[in-house]
Amino acid sequence: MSKNKKQKINIVYSTNPDFKFDFEEGEELVTLQPNQQKLYLSLDKKQRAGKAVTLIEGFVGTENDLKELGKMLKTKCGVGGSVKDNEILIQGDFRQKIQEILVNQGYKVVRKGG
Picture (tube, rainbow, N blue to C red):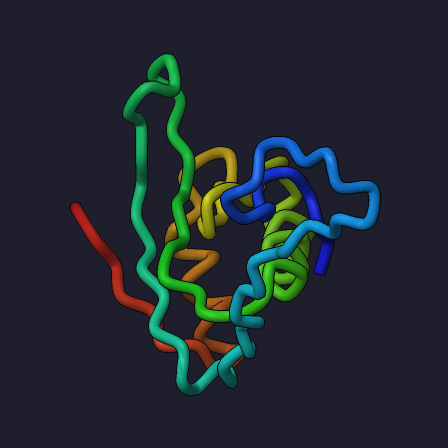
């Protein structure tokens, strides 16, 4: 785990030359198996200049596994996208195609919205 400034606990400055910062130890997430995951699929246009994106939420696991899933979906759809805030954003309306891909991978998929 990287140790950056945000993880330092309660100390701003010390004059002690032997002082060592205490760091928060966060829980390391374990990626659940696809058949234990319940992903939510929706179309989002809010604050995107009218452009539609397919939004996948609800992934439980490590950041690397989420990025890997996002990369696989972007590749299969042939479009761009990103992984932010524990969500996968795929440019365009690919809800049907992404649902088929995720179900074939073993994920439980629930469509939100219309």
